[in-house]
Image 1: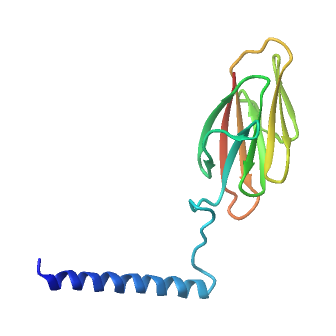
Image 2 (image 1 turned 90 degrees about the vertical axis):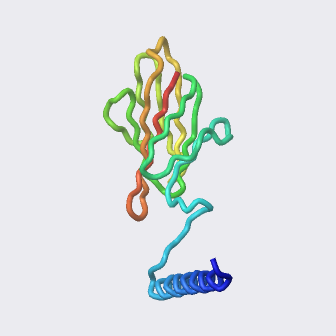
Image 3 (image 1 turned 180 degrees about the horizontal axis):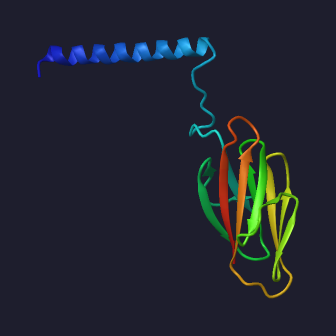
Length: 155
């Protein structure tokens, strides 16, 4: 490779980068462009908390993540923006947040905490057929209605 070849490649790269920046600036000027939300560029996600501490990894739009808690524990789920929460216990019908479902000795209540968060409280009321599977979905109330799902195993 000749020394002049490297200089030519650098100038082509610089020209390509400058053209890309100019194109992005043009799109931004007409209302287009892009928006990056947060450090990772994720626009909708769910974070989970147990006893006030982050638990597991964030669940991004389009994903399903499984987490487990002990019967009698609670877990909080917080979406990154306002969301509609629904849950299903042991494959049953989906219920709205604010409802309690009971499965043979285990009460599961999903309590709204805010426009974006809920607390899932579990209470043993007698012998229960553990583990019990609880599917929780958060559908974003804004934009394109992203959905993220948490598969909760109560053991």
